[in-house]
Image 1 (cartoon, rainbow, N blue to C red):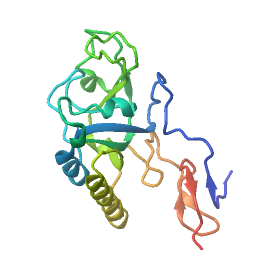
Image 2: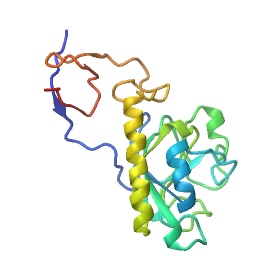
Image 3: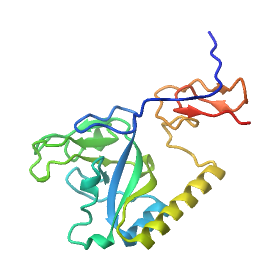
Image 4: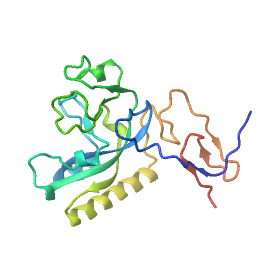
Length: 215
């Protein structure tokens, strides 16, 4: 049975998770990363670098909790802080909800792409009780905006830089993560059934959130 597509827009927003909701495998979610204003530009232009260690071992530390991201880096004046808005392709997620969890620092070696600490879990190091995530592969993370930056000039410059990066990626047809569909950008265990829109002939995927036919 063949299905013909023209244009649509999904009415549900699956990029935002409620507090305590586990990220679904293959989901692409909005998250945040707090950093120093001097480092934000490098992250935008060159991507994230995996930390050598941390509560959840090596990886890139992010959170869906904007208030948590706004607290970093610690012991730095808030005028020097930036919280970057991200889209994160979480892949296979492992929940770490207690101290000395057997996979607390080895989840990435056991087939998981992201480690997730739920809010108010039994992790003594997180005294705020806020949620946290650690992503192994930096390529799963895309900077899409600036969620917090008290410095007006720096905020404007960083947003302009993000816009230029996005424009360059579109014109250069940036390659998505190897496990993602080349059209919708979502993770695919099996190839998505791509086809041409019957109206405008553009290649589309039935799993993409929206499609607007070209005039």
